[in-house]
Length: 291
Image 1 (tube, rainbow, N blue to C red):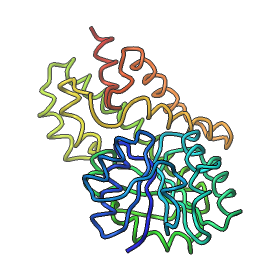
Image 2: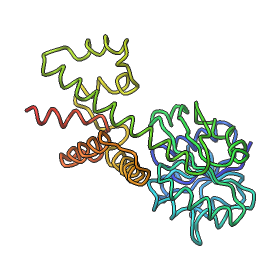
Image 3: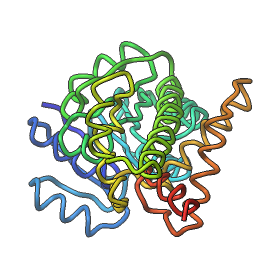
C-alpha cells in the first residue's frame, strides 16, 4: 500500500483515483470544484483537501491529471502547489496531456526540493479510465519510474518508460497524430459508403476483419453512422493536443500536413457548435457539406 494524492477529478481522474482505492492504496484527493472532491470521497471512502498543497502533504506519490500547461503549473507551483507540500524523496507523476516543455519545467522545480518526477500522459479515454485499462506513456529516470509503476498499474493495462522527462508527452503527441488521421479516414469511408447507398454496418462488419480494422472503427463506427457525438473525448481537448504536437513539429522540423489539415477540420466542427462533441464527429462536417 502507498500513501498517495490525486489532483484533478475530471472524467479521467475521478475513476483513476477510485482504482487506486480499490487496489488498497490510501488516497487523498483535491479538485478545483470541491463538490466533486466531496462526492468522490463519499463514493470511495477517501479523504479530500481544500488545496493541492494540503492533499500532497506527507504522501509517497502525488498524481496530477488536469487540463493543460497552465492548469498544471497552477496545481504544482506556488505557495499552495503540491511541490510546497510534498516531502523530500516523494514522487510527482503527471498524467496531464501537456507540452514536453512544461514537463521539463516541473521536473526542474521538483528536483530543487528533492522530489522525483515522471511525465505520464495516458490514452484510452473515459472508458479506459473507468475500466482500469489505460495506456500510460512515461518519461523520467528509470529508478523513479520503477518506484511508481506498480501503483500506476492500478488503472493501466500498459505502462512503458519511453525515455527522459518529456518523452512521455512526446509519445502522446505521436498517439494523437495517429488518431487524427485514422478518425478522418474512417469519417471519409463512412461518408463514401452512405453516398454510395451502402449499408454502413454491413460494410464495417466486413472491412473490420481485414487491414482496415482500428480501435476507432470497432468503437465508434456505429455512433458515427447514427450521428451521435455527445460523449467521449471532446474536440476542444483534441485541438489542444494537436496544437501542442504542431508546435513541437515546428521546432523539431517534422512535417505534419495531415495533422494540420485535420486540426482545421476540427475547427470547422467547432464552428458548427461541436466543441464538446466526440472527436469522431469529423463525419458530421462531411455530412453537412454533402447536404
